[in-house]
Length: 368
Image (cartoon, rainbow, N blue to C red; front, side, top):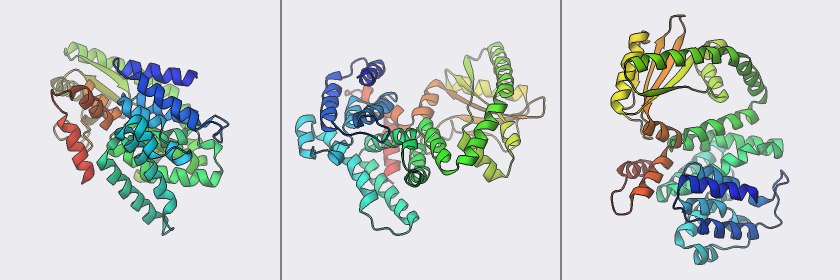
């Protein structure tokens, strides 16, 4: 299968010393176990397993997690037992697959108290599962992300229930684990299902604004890069995408109309060192006056999910605000990949040299 070949390529790229034999063995078992099973999209079921594994592989997680992702539905949907998995793949992988299966069964066994209470119970149980091994939740989130990408094949009512659950439980979990790109995507897919009219309207408006915004943005980025170079700050400047759900949420929460929200340009400055972050901040505040009350230093005081960055909003010459985030390359990676960034770091460093205290702290925090 070409998709499986792509998965192997992704793993090899992330980890040159990866145990590809383990991945191939997991694929063979999943492929045989799901034989004849189809998705509503008409794809063979194993295509979903490969997609979930690929989502995780792009985060650079360990092969054990990728193998568990390939096998994540075999206990639930096929004749394979946990004992058989353990015999073939060992306790660790069997435990991860079993953990994912248990989360899924939470949704079906409960008698139906009010929906909110049920969701809260699920969230609590999921967090307990996380505390044992965070990789269970990473697999579950990747599973949900692929299901949201293919949600158009589901009946409307079922899709709405799943989308609501995604907004209430899975997107916040992705946020807690700091995997920003998953959070945005989960929210946007759910928004499209739950509020199709507003979603369409927002998408059309954003598309219309895109051209003029991009022209402004390019000019701003170029100007900033030149000023940073003059100040001998080694950095790159990128535009920050606006996600449809977050624009809509801002409009609801702050009572602003679309044009007010979209007039706010946002850029990110990525430096090589922490000192570079503060030097870049000096350059930005020298160029434009900061807006009072809109400065946050999450480098000195990181958020609980380990996120670090400096946030400031300045007023440009044309009277429009510019939002600026400043962080190092490493902080940017953690902001995008969250707990997975620490996990990878711990994996690669744990051969007796040192463990990543940050990851352990984060797991302790999640347990609490």
